[in-house]
Amino acid sequence: MHLLPSSGLFMAQWRWAFSYTFGFVLTAKKAGKIMRVFFMALWLVSAGLSGCSTIGDWFASSPKEVEILPEEELYERAKEKLDKGQYTRAIELYQALETRYPFGRWGPQALLDLAYAYYKQGETESALTTIDRFVKLHPNHERLDYAYYLRGLINYRRGMGVVERFFPIDLTKRDMGPARDAYKDFVALLEKFPNSEYAEDARKRKIFLFNAMAAHELHVADFYMRRGAYLAAATRAGRIVKEYSSTPSVPFALKLMEKAYTILELDNLAADAARVYTINYGESPPQKEEKEKTLLGWIFWLFRWD
Image (tube, rainbow, N blue to C red; front, side, top):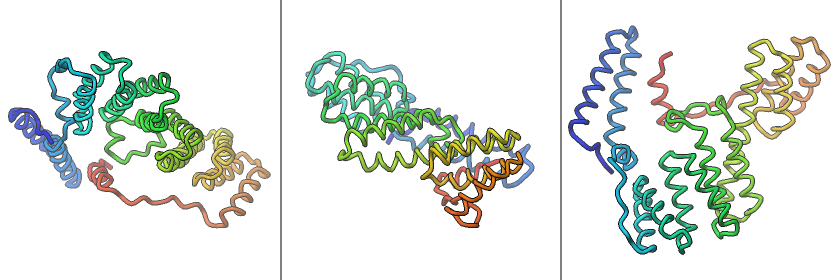
């Protein structure tokens, strides 16, 4: 674990937190909002003070020169930094290893480790480029299953910003392109390596992503519905029923179809949607699943402004 690099920066953070908090106190009208801002400032400072090596990497000066070492020793040093979470230094060492020993014994594993270091550092595009290079150069490698698994993880994170990584934002309301790419990666892993040690986790992630893509389609259909584009809403909902038939979004899609077709006075289609719903889900309306708040969920609730 590393503290921030200087006491001056520490004091600057506390001065910033103090002025930021009480500047809002002067203008806030509700006591609840005042307390939320106050605790948010304290939380931001404490998060900065308790940061691990990644925060230390942010304040690193310039890249350190990599000394000339034998291949195995250079790999061991890079792996040591990776295991300690010192991703910036690990990346420098892996890059030096790849440059100096491009056809060496540790080349393939170094590429995998480098992709993982980029992934943990949040450099998803570099991670994706590296893992694609591994797949292209080593199509028969014994760890190809891990490469597909890691690419799925990288693609999923590619759709997240800083806020989405630390707060329970509903990602199904965002662009689902990276999630679809991740889904394809996990599907490919399960098809090519059904007995892989990563298969079980990939299967769970595949189901999660499939449900998320269906939920995204439902958000789009609901958006059309609220805008009065009833035919577009019904069409999008029908797509959920057809392409995502095993997901929790289906009952909501059927109800939306029934409502949209009723407004459009397409009574036969509305009746069909109602009939399919009743056969599969009974007479009760669909219920949204309430998720229990995590620690971050409670923090997010505390900082809300509504």
